[in-house]
Length: 517
Image (cartoon, rainbow, N blue to C red; front, top):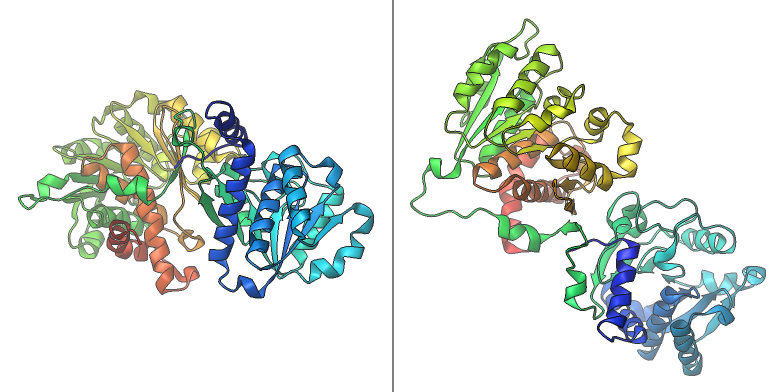
């Protein structure tokens, strides 16, 4: 599913009318009908609620007026609150306002001078439908509109926003001033970026996307480069198995990981490669850690390598790693390696000389922050998997800067260094060098825990070993990683989630994806 900007969604609206001869009034009618149907589904007790529908003067308000008409026609207790003057209604909204008036729907015009006079009527609303501002907001909402929004937020009633919570910038996901905090948002055609990305997702609440009759050609336009990872996208990527297979059929992963005090990172990445289905997992570690990890990992082959006096891998470990890589499918590099000059030399040399795909994570990324251009020297596909802090160090910028523009930053790095990028965090972003972006919709705050990224690195590497390309593996790995986290919190409190839980729930995540539940 594509994810649109406000401009792209406006173009879809325009083209639907100009190229496909669909009148805008029909699109508005369809939007209102679909929204009314969805509200019915969301609230089975709707016939017991006093419903207040707050409409602005634009097309968003027109959608709200259609919702009001259809719910009123079903015998529900509906009242319309027009935010502003009816004289300023746009054409399609004015038509629906006139119909609603003739139907006898209770209607109150809210003007700045008489907000207090309407307080009793507003306070009686048990369900608020927000159709005030729509997608056109680009700056702060102030004055009269801000006071209305803040008042509605304070009511404590359920709020359903139509298309977008009023006050939210749907391109950035930020709200500079007042913004509706919706419990549910019903959006039309395609999800908008700001509804998916944080902090916009906090204002959006639960999101429902409905089709209002836009031609499929417009909704799948390749010029819209941002995509949402959902079941329909990831299910076809699952590797298949055949009865005559053997462990060599599903690839061999080499993980170079760990240092003194960081054996857990090494264990998690190596174990995850097998749990996701790789045929064989080799783990290269500082020699002093071999006995620990040999005892900890039953199915993983551990290989002791040359180390420094501080218990990190030495640059002299290079030859041993090259021997490990014989007949291997993918290299997972960086989890828990530590940060020093020897590690940096080793990582840079491996990037330059290894001829199989590399998944570069954690200290592997930290090792090249002084010279990220080394990524351009790679002989094979490279996928980097930074969290915001690692991306900030790599690009010499602040974490806030990264978080404020996750899509653009991920795309810039992918294009500039010809790598795949997995920018981790709430709504993980995946970017390829060609400019395509993917936003993950699975996962939860409980996954913000040590080792979670190591598990993801192992999962992606294990999928590459099973013959997925590095972007396919990233999409499926990120989606299943988040889904595993969601399954964990179905069984235990999210604040108690540990990275090892994610490894245990990978099989359940795969099963859930296959079953489509």
